[in-house]
Image: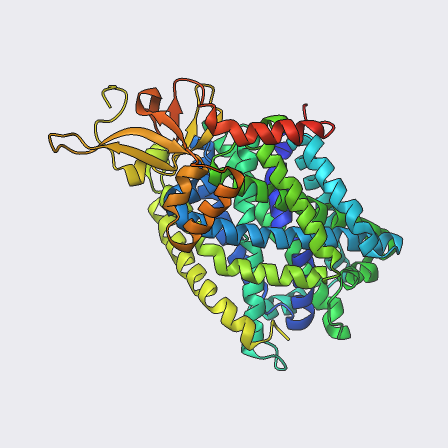
Length: 409
Length: 129
């Protein structure tokens, strides 16, 4: 039981990365539109984030230095600032979308328009960050988010033809009525959302908040190797559920309300209630994760005292940045921008900035000054190099693809 | 750098610049934003005199338009000639994955933090615990 609680940081991080508002919609949308022909991207994404997050937590557990420290140190003041600007903006957009997502989940439960919920949600997010202890926050939202397992139960209840599903997943080409560029655009969106940089900012900073020491290396790796695959599995079951129910019905997903339909079909009202709890926890957890990550990245770039392990008065600049970030996120979503669209764009834009975060991690994970004998194994380096090439290709083609496909229209 | 705990020579770009500075108690002080070098008269290699820390040290390193913009903002916040915090090399206890000092961090390095704490954060309920 203690083990289970030891990995809630990994679970919360992965839920923020894999089943936040953007992914909930993206997974359902791609499932409904492309069947399982994009399921392989989930696998590629989970392997990629596990690979780099493991390096990052290894560096953090052994040296106590979180990821943005490494970014500043290896990229220097200028390129580090460019990365900070890009990462912060993406994280802010994602936070805005999550605030909208929580509000949408509340709208589904109460039928009160989501815009009325947005300021209340923004305030709640800030109060939790201001007052609630890090470990308590992480356990509550990490474990509640697991309610999304209801999608896996729904898939099982629907009793699909597993052979046909596997055949679909093993045939990675777009369906006859869809074009290759659009298919690739959504592949990049899924990949980008799996590898969003704030996941490693949050996971490693959270490790410092929890006081990970070199002797905690095993548990910190378990956080990575259980958390992220679990997040990927939740996202995959949403995709499969959508492919089974929404695809054949011809539903075009553009709202959170449609994501929950397969659960309603398979499990009825009770299932929907559990799914809504899962939506709320996952989006609220992701809002906490992104708001904190904004503060972590800025605080670590400038070398301020940061974190929730000290009272706010001892980390004044850090808490001021978070307060400003939450206010800005709330303001963005109150302009009535569609939360789902905001995340879609933020995910794709973050795909363009990925190498700037992952290259420094790879370099430091090979530095014996930091890690001694715990530097990367040759196999890890080969795999990581392949992924780095992939990240570079993705970051180069993202914006052109976005223009060519008119953002996947 | 006469202290035997520190290396005699160091690649400052790789091992010193942009590293985190921690004080005696492990509290974050700031980054090594810039360095003060002393060139000996006998033509020997330059010696690191002090670590410079704070926005006033970081600005000039951001060359070009970004650097100018940075200095303009700084002028508004802190009129006059802003001075970075100077940390003497003799106060450095250890150069590792972070730079550790053997005394508390300099006052200047915490000036903005202190102002924001006293005027904003400490006034919000719950900020002190």
